[in-house]
Image (cartoon, rainbow, N blue to C red; front, side, top):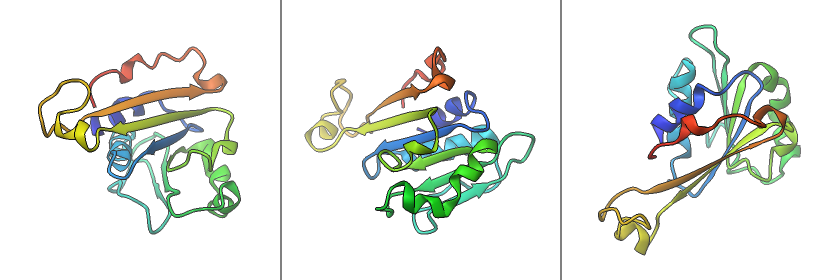
Length: 161
């Protein structure tokens, strides 16, 4: 997941909104950590669950990373407005964990990253791909929405996660 975040970072630019969706433990924060590494930002990217959002300034000339965890927010965009994400968005890359259904109105252009993790019997047998028992198998679907992502080649993200 971390390597996927690094690869994804190469495609991102200021103004990009990325929504991360997946169950607890799916790897959303690990992917965000890879994004931070790929973007070259200051500070360790950790789960912002209790502070809701963290801003990681760039170490060089890249964009800041605004990392949001919307898990504890129930009010959708109204509750998110207090975070002023719309102000940060034009010059930053904004990554929102648990953002689906909450922040889509921030931008017509966004990237949805859905992480599915094998659980229960699938995990014990190595998932649907026939891996060995104990493999931490994930399926990641990346979907671009809006003109920013129309025709964008997302093949650079291909690979195992």
